[in-house]
Length: 255
Image 1 (cartoon, rainbow, N blue to C red):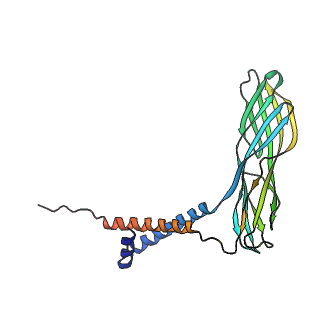
Image 2: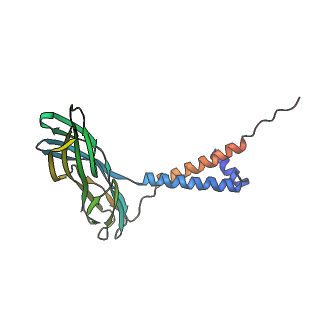
Image 3: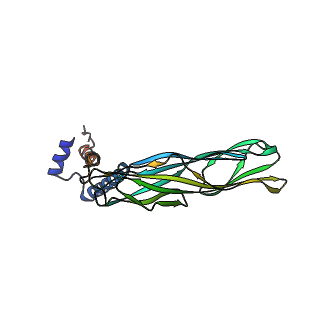
């Protein structure tokens, strides 16, 4: 197939100019997307924030990740620290209403979660949460900024400075996350709402921390994987065009 593609490309156009340019343009888009997806490597972990106070116990969970990268000596590189929502659960001691476990998605901001399984009353768990992170580094480098704060789920940029590093060194940035939360539990009976109890603002340290690796290299490794993907995509597109060109409808001869 590859030999036929090369021969046809040398002798005559496989597609009209307009269609060929469109195919090549789509190929470049697909290749760029593939390289982006393959090129991003990250250390990630499910991070838990434990809460244990009177009448409330449980954990808040968040996915945290920190990108790996390669940087040249006496240079810098940008990476990203990311947080993503996960399911969490709390067990509530509601006094005369019993003990109930509530499952919900960890919030940034405020959410109100109904407590099910209660007869004769409506009870809500109100949670207000925010997430922050600190970045520390080991090795001949530094990070900026070192303090992060998220107002929504997603990523934050970090610059790793390797001006003091030399070829072969390794810089290891670590993300340590904290979750700040306050809780209120209210009950509504016959249209009247009162607060059963509340938990004032608390800062919870996450476990584990997430550590990435920034390799320092004066001669970055040739991305053979990307080159291979490029060859496969181009051969597939052009090969498909060759196949369609060679496939002609059969004309039945008249008797």
